[in-house]
Image 1 (cartoon, rainbow, N blue to C red):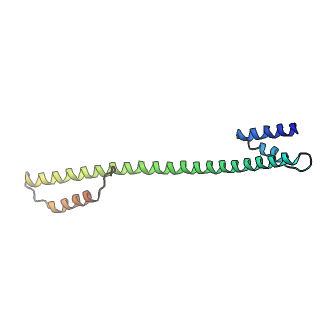
Image 2: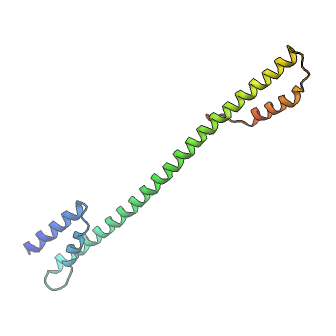
Image 3: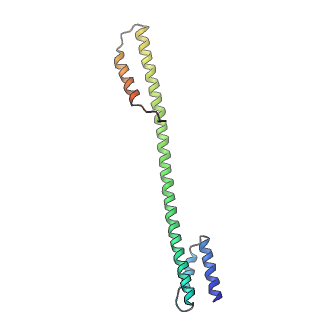
Amino acid sequence: MEVPLAELASAASEVAEGDYSSARRIFEFTRPGPYPPQIQEVAEAFGMMAVKVEAREFRLERALAEIRRQNETIEEASRVRAEFGTMASFIVIVLSLYTMALSFMQNVVKLDINLRASASVFSFCRSHWRSPLS
């Protein structure tokens, strides 16, 4: 009985180290006949435990891969949002400069420019722009 028990312990240790192919060796101890019923019961328990641990490990690896994929998607969305925020800031600056130039031309150069239309465009853009930090 010591030899089958030592072999069973060796196979169980291999499974504990992550070698799930050793589970087959464990299940060989469940065959009726050459091994006592106690060895068969222990082998059955170890074998089922190995199968469940391997299945759980497989599910965890799949979940981790999905989390990594989602993280990449989030990072890409964050990068795009930052780029959009930079572009929106640039547009606000350009519109501000445009409005200032129109005001200068109307007040200093005395050009008759319809500032109301320009101001409404600027006001619309400013009210619909959200800072990328908010």
